[in-house]
Length: 193
Image 1 (cartoon, rainbow, N blue to C red):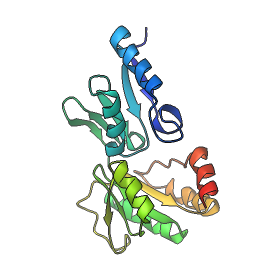
Image 2 (image 1 turned 90 degrees about the vertical axis):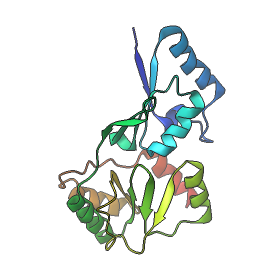
Image 3 (image 1 turned 45 degrees about the vertical axis):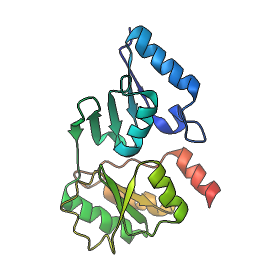
Image 4 (image 1 turned 180 degrees about the horizontal axis):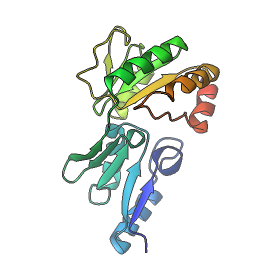
């Protein structure tokens, strides 16, 4: 008998419009109400974004969220982190150096905001706000003092060849787990450009 169901958001629970269908909500609630199956949202998205979708289904059903590629596990009932993994400052600085060397755009993520030195378009800013993600703009990530921020994701964005070259170097860092972008997003990005 199943006791837990883990569901990803993008490309799984969400449709192309980034919405949860009424049908999906119905079956998730039915599994919980009739069989006691707990559903856990698991995603690479930020915790704030994941919780917006968990709230749509209901706190009684979605009691836990695993977000930011496993860096955060949150107990939503007791409003505390079961697990919170951040990257050490030395590896963050080295990752920034590597990503800049390979001419990639960089975002740093905490549980509360995204830190960037990339000017976001109005559409990107609206999207982040819609998804519950706040943006903290800084002058230059290379010189920003992030020691007071608990960073758990460093993202590199750009050309596939540059990303591939950066990955080889990033995999040598102690507290960095390299998670390549999904094919879905790679294809979508090519269409949008």
